[in-house]
Picture 1 (tube, one colour):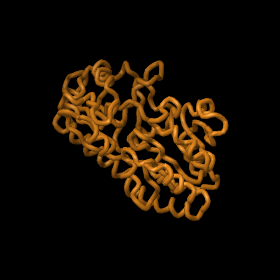
Picture 2 (picture 1 turned 60 degrees about the vertical axis):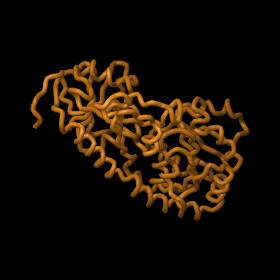
Picture 3 (picture 1 turned 180 degrees about the horizontal axis):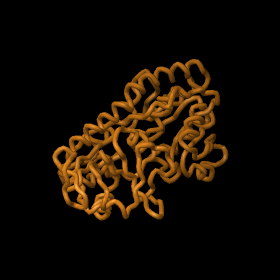
Picture 4 (picture 1 turned 180 degrees about the vertical axis):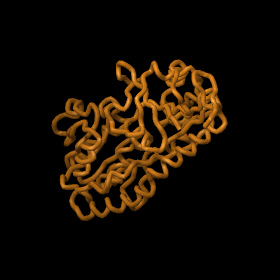
Length: 332
């Protein structure tokens, strides 16, 4: 199939476009949020397509990820998502602004199914009349990269100051009293001004994916302090790399990290105790990492993820013909 999808979430897009379809990534002159294209990524099955060329493009299905894309897709392609252009809406986020009273932007329609990335999100969003399905995360195996040779705590948080309590940034100094907390991600340079010089928390840079994996895997353990986000891909990737993990028991983390394979709790002291165990005992940390990697390879299989997406895209296109600028043509 030819799948139209905007490059919104780099890690998720990377996993999605490694399937067996042809993926069209819109670009505009600004190369902004509405036309980022591949952004320099090496994705063999993708084709960058200019906004101006979308009206004449052959498109089988569009994967929407932001409410604004519904109108944008119709304006650029001349086809209405969910009507003469098969569509699914991929929801990356936990409900907001309220955990139980938030109505999903697509709740009041039945033409476009909502794909949630966790069962937690599916049950907590008010999805109204919309049909929903859950396709849990799956990632390509980065390999067993863990070395743990730096006795520090690794964390990946984009915009840790702006998002603050949502991402659990306020909890980092508690762990900084045990060992240095190295924070990777966008705008982490703002942490020093917010936390001060003696917090034990340091920005480790906003690295490219390969560099992030390499440097994160050198830290003794991975900390996932997020209070209210979807299950972070960085947590999954840390497990796949063979890192021991310590995670706040919020949203889907408790389901992702089973008992005995990592420390998951709402008790920060319990999490700190587990972190100390990994920091002082390298063999313990390494064995915990091996065990959680074996779990992650099964639980977050990339092949399973792609097969579930194949099924979802096949179902949504089964009853709707492909069209060009609103004119149907035969399905080959």
